[in-house]
Length: 126
Image (cartoon, rainbow, N blue to C red; front, side, top):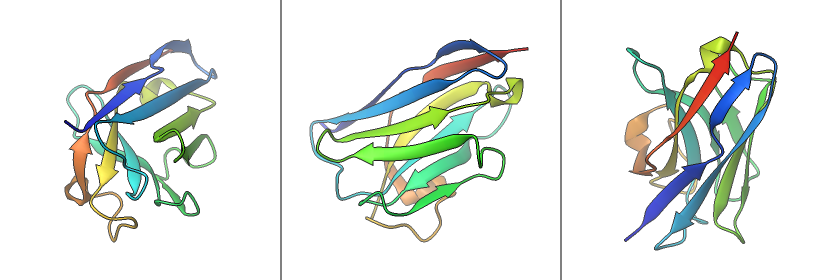
């Protein structure tokens, strides 16, 4: 059974950094676009970052541009999200998702993704 498993979340102070990982198991997602979403309490799930199958194209929400970096290692079937200069408003559960295609038309739409991880909690204290 195909699975995506996130890790690397935790508690960090404002201005700190975390690196999230998303490892695939059960099948390879190296030919799929990949994305990171997040959901804060009482809010809808929102797009954070996306990367095309090759890693050549990346996309970011305006709120994280310049602070977060998405990357992937297809040899390890793993996607990463490096998060720097963290703010309290970054507090959320972060989800990894596999896109339906190698390159997506609408990166921010959850409907473009068909596999989701269970999420990892990121808490930024002020």
